Image (cartoon, rainbow, N blue to C red; front, side, top):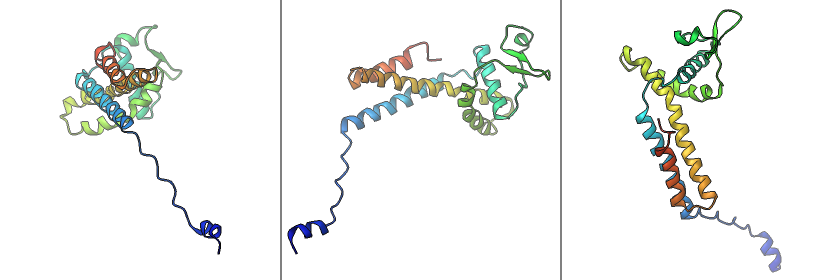
Length: 178
């Protein structure tokens, strides 16, 4: 046998995967901490009630979506009578909200989870518990947006430290925080 034949018969092990650079791992950890801190602070500061009719209509739409009902079961009386309000009457006499469905789709898992956990709370606190849990969607979206802001800053040339700092400033120091 020739040396070339022996070399062809030898099974070569694949090259080892390159290790992830320590700087990239550090960046990932810092971004996860940013997400958790901004989301956590926002959750702690959540009021547990609707701040505006938009919040209330979004909650009602989420509840209708989860319960597979096209109509709203509860209406804000002050807004239901107005023609310029967030409700419209359907042909069958029921009312629906004029809001985009996207946020209600994102809120549905939070609504289902908070409704399940609310069964452990006293009955007079369950509605507020479910509302608070449903509005935690906004807290998670704020945390994710802070991460996007940090990544964008890093992509545009900021150092990791400055990009992450900008994420904290956005998440904790702007009007976006409830």
